[in-house]
Length: 335
Image (cartoon, rainbow, N blue to C red):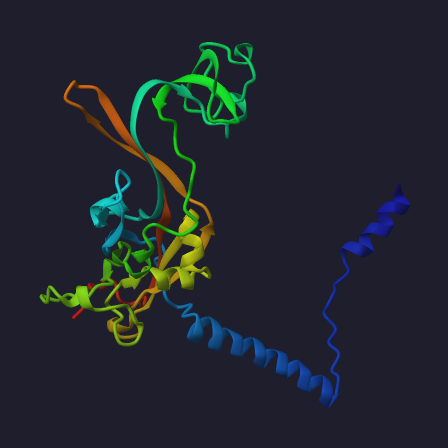
């Protein structure tokens, strides 16, 4: 143990110093100073000048969106061969949208439905039968249109299906291979967006503040000549999303519309303009709706529609970078 203590005492009294080695090599010196210069240039040029690292940011805007679709189309009436006019009240769901809206481009109509018994559609495999025992009374048809009555009946000259109680005649499954509302490619979509960055009390709108009521009826969006006219032709939107209107409008689709604000308040406020982008999310989109009416005997009927079309999902992102020494910035509306 005495030996261990004896070895520990010199170690406690040791004193260490750094030893520097001076290398007189021009090549190594140039590389060493070049690395210092590169780091300095990165900090000054990229972090401070390009990315404005000295600025505070707000990337969580509050926003409002109002959308309006305009256009008129004509089709054959689904009850007779006469022509039917479709306007915004018919082909837009809802009629005045927010950040999601649906534009009808095609549809299947099943008219004059009433609650009674009829043969189920053979497209439902659960409804196909060869005898009554195949149809258990009281069972709903899987993915079908009604409740089985226990009878196997003829659907047409070649196929037999279970009889059901439901809305009859059953839904028509015949879809035209071209859109019924082909004129929808020329419809226009108006997207009004107001953003507010509460952290810096900074607000901005993407529309021109004008008293001219005809301005938005006649203008079309152009990033250079009409940056404050957020009116887009439907065909152009689908094209920017990378698809053909003629092909996509038959079965419908889902289009994501993105509005992106990036504002640098070291620059003039007039240069704070949004960027618009459109991307296809799905190639099929439909839903069902019905209108109900009664005859003179108060018997209820309905017309069932399976609507195909474009659903537009509109999102807003943004970032504002005001100078640190500017506490509050109040932006006036577009001039």
